[in-house]
Image (cartoon, rainbow, N blue to C red; front, side, top):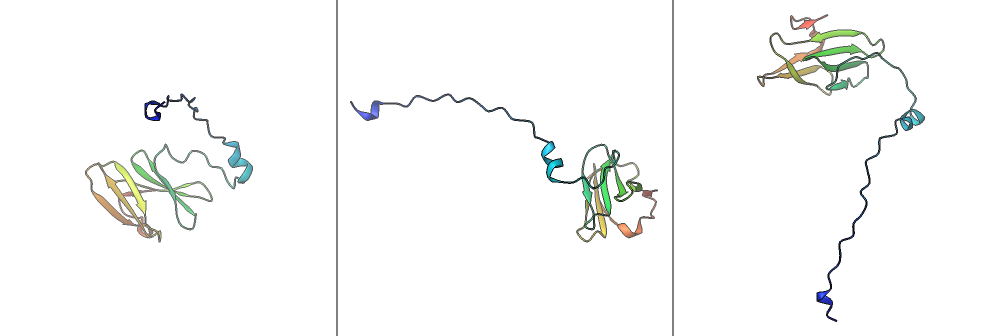
Length: 119
């Protein structure tokens, strides 16, 4: 018999269904240092390099929180514009925001006293 005439039949394999992640594993291996009430409504969240400040995109504004207390420190917003994204510089000196008109603004974090910042 000629081997070139033999065709392999496809083997049907059972598909593995994705499993839900086991969240208990995290609590088994990592101790919870501190829990906070909800700080933001979704979106980007980042921490400063010293882990003392948290930045969160919250309802088209950037909310800035003190990590130790969980208190809101500042709300950075742009008048008549929705903030879509933000980034904090690696040295924690600047925060850049961008909006729907593709305008990018860079703020000095130490000078959060401008009219665009609301305590």
